[in-house]
Image (cartoon, rainbow, N blue to C red; front, side):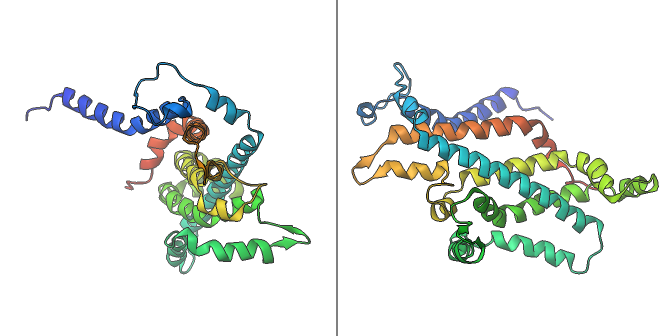
Length: 278
């Protein structure tokens, strides 16, 4: 059988990579142009970058607080969902509970409806039910972390269950024979083997929370406002500040790239772990 030339594959994937990365590059080009040049003849190459937009965004104390809120909310939600999802999957995998398949299916039903359906119930819960005196969950970081758990926790459970199921139960039994407690079996036997799947779940839930706009725009006012909702402040009746919006968008990419870089070595293994059982 004649082998296909590797040059064709290289050209193809180079073209795909270019098409994928070009919007990000164009976003950077817009961010380093002054407002008067944005509607002139498009120039792909940046010959004289204008860094005033970056100085304005970085010097804005309000935008820095929005970014801090986004980092805290996204990280807190990702860690909480991944941890709870791991323990839930361990219970579903190791214990013979009646109706556990129905429970497993029920968890994903929260992802079937659009988030807009939950806006009014969540608003009422955060303003009328979960209150302590004058304190309310509305417009708080902890409130947004819990709100995102409504959608990200079912996803974490569905993502992690094949990973936990792929770990032989015989390892647990061998650890019990050696005198290990249930907590040690979970933390020292199962958890280390689940790291690839945990890394994938962590990065995906983090990105979902980081990019979310609708719930953050509705359930926050000032204290817990995120960076994605801050973009809307530059769309006004007098015009849109495209350069500032592009600069903020570039800033939103940086934390995502850092988080992705920290767990990238686990991602390929995590996506295939548990896919084949024998």
